[in-house]
Amino acid sequence: NFCTGAQKSWTLIQLFVNRLDSVESVLPYEYDVFDFCKDDNERRPSENLGQVLFGERIETSPYKFSFKKDEKCKKLCTKTYVKDKTEDKNMLDFLKRGMQLNYQHHWIVDNMPVTWCYDVEDSQKYCNPGFPIGCLVTTEGRAKDACVINSEFNKKNTFYIFNHVDIKLTYHNGEGEGWRGARLVAATLEPKSINNADADKPTCEGPPMEVPGEFSSDVKITYTYSVSFEENNDIKWASRWDYILVSMPHTNIQWFSIMNSLVIVLFLSGMVAMIMLRTLHKDIARYNQVDQEDAQEESGWKQVHGDVFRPPRKGMLLSVFLGQGTQIFIMTFITLFLACLGFLSPANRGALMTCSVVLWVLLGTPAGYVSARLYKTFGGEKWKTNVLLTALLCPGIVFADFFLMNLILWVEGSSAAIPFGTLVAILALWFGISVPLTFIGAYFGFKRPAIEQPVRTNQIPRQIPEQSFFTKPVPGIVMGGILPFGCIFIQLFFILNSIWSHQMYYMFGFLFLVFIILLITCSEATILLCYFHLCAEDYHWWWRSFLTSGFTAVYLFVYAVHYFFSKLQIVGAASTILYFGYTSIMVLIFFLFTGTIGFFACFWFVNKIYSVVKVD
Image 1 (cartoon, rainbow, N blue to C red):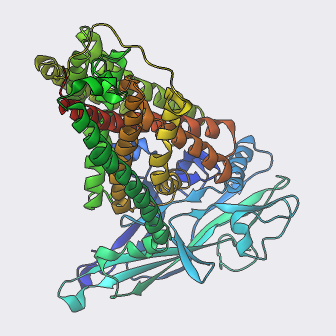
Image 2 (image 1 turned 180 degrees about the vertical axis):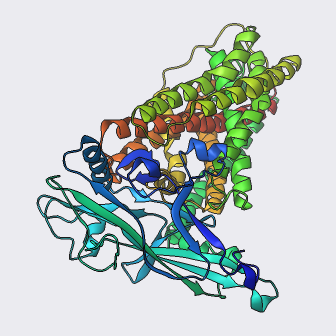
Image 3 (image 1 turned 30 degrees about the vertical axis):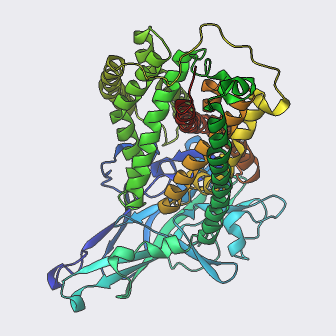
């Protein structure tokens, strides 16, 4: 509430500023790094772990308004850049670089983004939760980015800085509804470039504020703002984000994507059902006949019953991957479920990341348990190595990658560089909570007996016959990832947009649906290919089942490369390294996640079919 009666009708409203980011660079910067007007009594609200990891740096700004008190052309400060001063030249160059790369402000009032709403094609209104510092007209006279909005931005090799904003705050008055006060329901602004003739008494009228490409004379920039208040009792406080989210199109594409995925699922389910009901039913009936002589002449999956549960090579590594994959799977499921219920909305800044990290740390026990139980089933005896690798291998790879990316951000002076204290806190969570929980899980896993197999394993391995091209390992694995990827690639586009193009992501209902579809598709595609390989008398299914659905991650990487070259305008070596560094973390997590789904689906299938066969 902004006011609670006549005495408090001039409640102060504080505008906060967040880090500035760009679609042309992965490096975000704090507001203070650019030479804007600063708040004399600067304060920073406490940030959660998710906000720190995402590089959000919120601080107070000099923009302060009194409720219901309109201001016209109020001066904030004047910044002067003297030609002969090196420090001034560096500051102005950094500001120009920010305009050239289209860096965007992100302002916040009452936890609402201050949006710049403008018309796009088909008379649609688009509300951008950020607005640019300024824009550039190139030496060839081409207007870049926001310079296209004004025909006066036409001088070659010139920057135009948005040094004035018209802010409009819309509020819902509660007097007619039995409660006193008012609530903010919308905050919009329009950026303008104005060169005030008199810096001390600005009128906010005149030609645009030009910053020449060549720093040949002193430059003086005066920052001003106007603010107006509007009452609108039609917008309820609970639905105040709607005007931003509605302007993000794509719901139709989402439904198209879901329908496309469901067709794939139906096709796969039909195939699996046909195999399970018709082929397997016939096979089992035939194999279980009294007249076993003819049946023994049959080729097919029954023939490898004595080898199908032979422990895989590198069983230690497979069990470690499956332990980690189980941890990631449960974490993803709970996070998406909570997001669907509305606990992790965009209004709750950093909540999604915080929730994921905390869940991952607390889910060390299932990882240790699954890894230990499977390793014991594979006949492994180096249980200490197994526990240590489960606790340290994959998280260690992710942390090492993350640490290297953080070093680059730190060298570049970006606000996304995580403070040393936060890194220590993450290590403390990992070694203080996650690792001990993994040890506890592994203890219970090793205490339990090994998983009992439905058939005995022969002592002498069976010779695998010559395989056709499609039943060889590599073609099967490559084909296995195509269908799951086909189910997710449209959703993937929106997720990558939210990460790299700084668009809001709020469609968690769709994402949860796609998660379930991905789960079914990975399982069914792996079961199908596993059945074909067993029919070809190739019993090496352990690793293959993991890699078949895990190969979806390779398609994810290929798509991320395509997205980088076709959709992003990222420039600079540091930004490129950061993009691919963070992408490789995503790919590794997705590989473990999908591989685990495929493995357990296949493990269930193989156990099921061999448990109903009579063996001599």
